[in-house]
Image 1 (cartoon, rainbow, N blue to C red):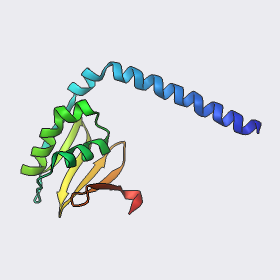
Image 2: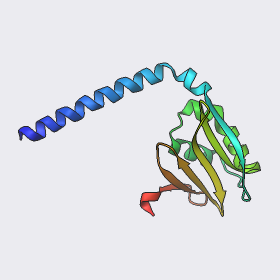
Image 3: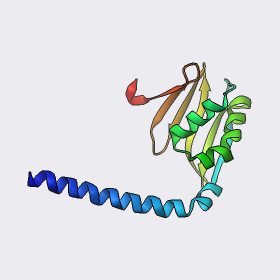
Amino acid sequence: MEYVSKAVSAKCTWLILILALCIEGCASTDSYSSKLRITPLSNKSTIALSADDVVQIMRQVGFSDEQILKLGTDMHDSLLQSGAAQLEVGGKVEAIFAVNDGFVYIVTRSRGTFIYNVETGRAITSAQL
């Protein structure tokens, strides 16, 4: 029982540390948001996404509502006109989005790989395949 108590205590300590870092990150959201950029990439397949699709895809990657409002049109236009896009944060590529046969394939640096099915409006992770 004592071992469980120590494990819970250690997890609480990590949780508090993570929350503190998140709160500090929230305080500097404007500078973080200003470093975000969606850049179109060339791809053979393109797709016309609904606003709901764009929101679902961007939430899967971890965009905030404010960031979705700011960059959602760029994401939509990139996938419609070029078929692919990359998310840059401070000059580093953090995610790549590519269209193929009614699916949007998403590869991220920190959140894993996802496949968004436009027909069903659902994303699956590579672990679910």
